Length: 319
Ligand code: 2P0
Image (tube, rainbow, N blue to C red; front, side):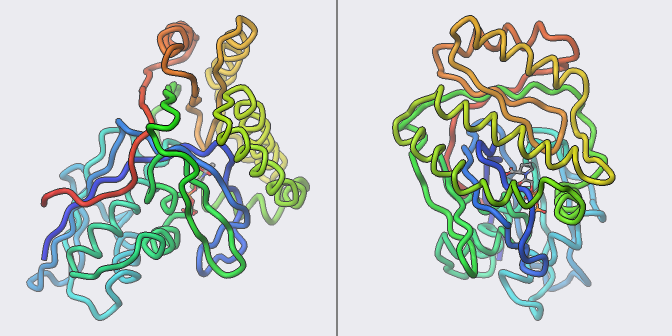
C-alpha cells in the first residue's frame, strides 16, 4: 500500500527538443544523457482509501500546481479507477530551474507507484510510462550513459556505458536559482511551430547521436565534448530563432562558457552543456574536477556549484 523510490536527474549530452506526438508525449528525436549520482528526488506513494482525492506534498508542503500532472502519471500506472494516493516528494536541489527535476521526479514516481499498487512492470515499460509524464524522465530509469531511442511507435531506453565504465564528474554552475519563465514542454512546442531551424535540427540528430555513441564507446572526452557542445548550441539556436524567442541564458551563463573555453585552451579536458535554464553544466574527468571547480567558482555571476558523479537508475528504497 506504500512504496518509496529514488531517482537521479540526468543531463543530456545529445538533447531532446521537440515532440512528434503531443498526446503521447513522444519526443521527435532520440537523446543521450548521463544519470547523476548526488542529486536526487525521493517519491513516496501511499494508497489511502480515506482520501477524497490525490494529495501531493513537495518537500513537506502541499503543492497544487503539480498535482494534476502527478495524478495523471499515477493513472497511467494504476488506471483511472484506482483509489486516491498521497504522494510525498523530497529533492535536494532546486525544482524547475533547468536541472531536470521533472526527470528524477517522474522516474521515481512510476517506480514507487507501480510498487505501491503491487504491479510488476518491466523497466523499459516503466521508462515509456515515465516518458509520458516527462520525456527526459525515461532516461533516469537507467544509470550511466543512457540512450533514448525514438522508435516508430514508442521509445526505448538502453545503457551505453555503466557509471563505473567511465567515471566522469559533472559540475553544475547555478547562475539563477528561480523557476524558468517558460516550461520546456511549452517552449518545445513554440520552437516546433515557429523556428525556421527546427526541421534542420530534427534532420541532423541521427548523425549527432551516432557521433556521440562512438565517442562514448571509445571513452573519448574531447570527441564527446565537441559533438555535445555543437548539439547544445544548435538546440539553443532553434530556441533563439523561435517566435517569441526562448532565451534561457543570462550573462553568467555566457561567462561560464568563456571559462570552459579558457580551460580547454589550457589543455583541460572539459566540455559544457546547457539545458532549458541558465545553469551551465561542465563535464570532465575526475582528475580535473578541482581545476574546473576553481575556475567556475571564480566566474562572475556563479552563485553556487553542485558536483556529481555518474549514478544509477531509479530504484525502490524501503518506505
Ligand atoms: C534534454 N530538455 O534532453 C532537454 C534539453 C531540456 C533541454 O528534456 O515536456 O521536462 O516534460 O517531455 O522532460 C526537458 O524536457 O519535457 C528536456 P517534457 P522535459 O534534457
